[in-house]
Amino acid sequence: MSSPLIGVVMGSDSDWPVMEAAAQALDEFEIPYEVDVVSAHRMPREMIAYGEQAAGRGLRAIIAGAGGAAHLPGMLASVTPLPVIGVPVPLKYLDGMDSLLSIVQMPAGVPVATVSVGGARNAGLLAARILAAHDPELLARMKDFQQHLNEQATDKGKRLRTKVAGHDAFGFGK
Ligand SMILES: Nc1c(C(=O)O)ncn1[C@@H]1O[C@H](COP(=O)(O)O)[C@@H](O)[C@H]1O
Image (tube, rainbow, N blue to C red; front, side, top):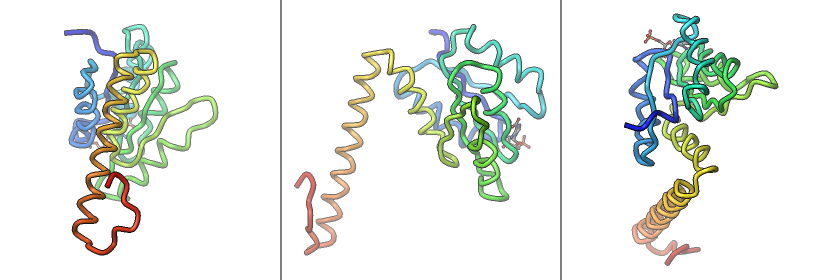
């Protein structure tokens, strides 16, 4: 198995049902990744070690998901030079707003690329794009993926126009 290029980490294994979508996106692009629980709050020393060692171990980006007082992505970003993508994980209370605000509002100098609440799939796709910027083969696959999305959306329009007869006003891809 090739060594991981992306670290997919989360504050708890309870985040996995949300974070799994990041792993699935990486699987679709055949990007090797590792998965682990790394908590800034509950295992601060291990979290610092993970962030400090990530680049040296060959990772190219870190996807970090956490819920509630989600300090993990920002703390990782403070100790690694790698791009960090933060995923706000929604919990039972506050619908993920707490997590979103904890991740997104970073001080200048310590960037975290924050995706939407529960947006782990986009985190995986963003990590794929980061790698694709220096990998022509991966870039070509990302373009194919975007073309496929376009075709799916166009088909949805066709189906909707068929369903709502008489409202064929514009008609992309007729
Ligand atoms: N936000 C953080 C951090 C952190 O930011 O370091 N560590 C754990 N957590 C979050 O606590 C929530 C509840 O965790 P448990 O389900 O283990 O009680 C999870 O969403 C986790 O990401």
